[in-house]
Figure 1 (spheres, helix red, strand yellow):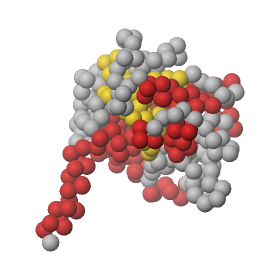
Figure 2 (cartoon, one colour):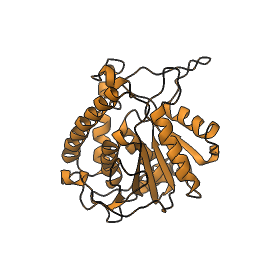
Figure 3 (tube, helix red, strand yellow):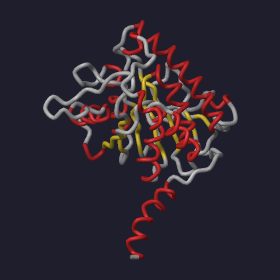
Figure 4 (cartoon, helix red, strand yellow):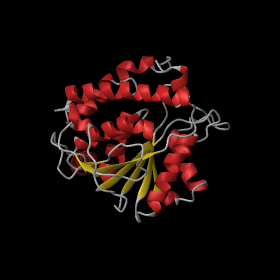
Amino acid sequence: GGGSKMAALGPCRCLRAAVACRASIRARHTHLVPSWRHSRPILVPLHQTLASSSNAFKTEDAGDANDRQYDGIVVLAGGLTASGGVPEWVKGRLEAAADLHSRSPGSVILVTGGGTPHKPPILHDRSGHVIHESTVCADYLVSELGVSPNSVLKETSSYDTIGNAYFSLTIHAAPLGWSEVCTVTSAFHMPRARACFDWIYGACASAPRVAYLPVADEGMTEAALEARRRREEESAAALRRSAEEVGADLAAISGWLHSTHRCYAVNRQHEWGEPTEATKEELETY
């Protein structure tokens, strides 16, 4: 009857309201200076959309934002060890997030990532189920760092950095009405991560303000680190081109993501399982 019809429509309307988006970025969005010497979140104003100018990838020095209170602390996963554990560079991200969480009462830590297209998934010994990167990160936060499981959320839909940004926003940040978010990742990964979050969160009028916290690059060989840095620069350039073509509109971004991206487009799912272009050195960092 009419009641069941409204019940079916209700969640859709709620979701549309939660992620109602405009192309313009609000002046209240602020962003971090991505400098390797910083170990605390630094914020600067963002005045331009990625769709209109590549200058949106540039930032200026600003004051220390370490005293800010965050609703969500978003940690980007960074692969698993061969045995399904947390790599050293990801431990640094999680430890930084736990520390920030302890100084931001009421915050939750959101760990992101289902896996990577660059390596096959690691399966649970007993059940054979896929071990998601965010699940392993969540377990480390709880069992090793003493964070309450009630203060941890996870996201298992993303398989790369742009997915981290998109799904953290649409699954958690927007529906939960977060106002302040800090994104945590390794220094080598921060420029592209910042570009992704600037674009995705900047395309949504109800998105929270975002700060960024880079952590030290540890636990990988120098050759692997240099290879990954080069790859990050290439990926950031490709992202810049996509942002300019697609624009700062969440509906358009969703269409682009699910129609062209190897990880999310049905018309490319036949590529899943095929080797990617990642080199041996780069694979050490996933």
